Image 1 (cartoon, rainbow, N blue to C red):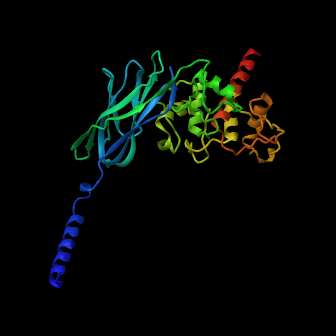
Image 2: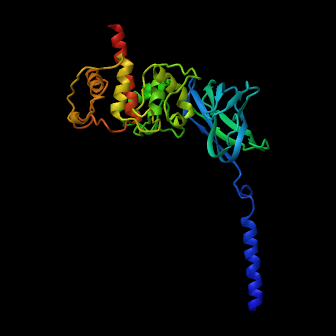
Image 3: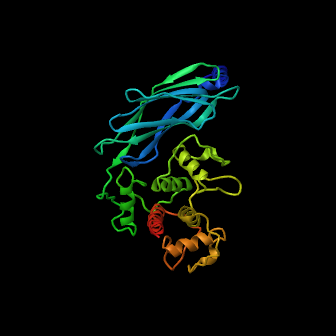
Length: 351
């Protein structure tokens, strides 16, 4: 190939690259996609599950409308909501179809990137353990210039159902120290297993998860529309918001000194003890003493609650008579403490 021909080819490629680089950004943007997440991998009949609709690769979304299909024989619709600022219109479902619309208000920028768009709450009903399925059939996206796009994702999510009763088994708890407690808690309906037949007792639990578990165990009413005053309210998962709002209103949770709640942070054994004793009989201000080998590591704000809980038998030490105050609590530890609290409250009520 001659020098002039090589030059001409090179210039043509350079011109093509330059032209492509000037194309509008949206021409190269990814198409929006949508996913569904279920709050409880396994639910028990009568429990509520929250299906969260998340959008990815969004571009300047000022408003949207979501269509979610469900089986009315297995699921009972409860409510729809969005954490996004603006105005929501949850329409009454008809023939197993939930239609939920939301729009921003005023001269504000549209939503771009990834965001949780809506949370739809159902109650599990039916007479068998057939898996209910929800399907995102249609999403309408409206940009700030009022142009719109309709997407038909067809995204589905299954809700595994565990029948309540005394014959609840999980394949990973046969030799676990908390086996009987796990089966009791699951039969009571305030905690569930996972769709693969496991319970995962030694998995750590977040602050949000523990509040929801506690609220279910003690029949807190998630009323909805209650204010949340934490500075990090936007990080609180949709499925936990109503329970956390109720717990805040009743004084069960108070957050950190900086005004945050930190819902996705692992809850420590000390924090769990404080919440447990608030439920038992309010605050504890006495100068309690404990016999744990690592008592010097227990912070002063937690010591009265740890002492009171240990005295009641709600808290028992780990190997070597350690309390391990800063250790993250596990699912098994959390439910066992709640069960012991229930038993302690029964004795208190009898007295």
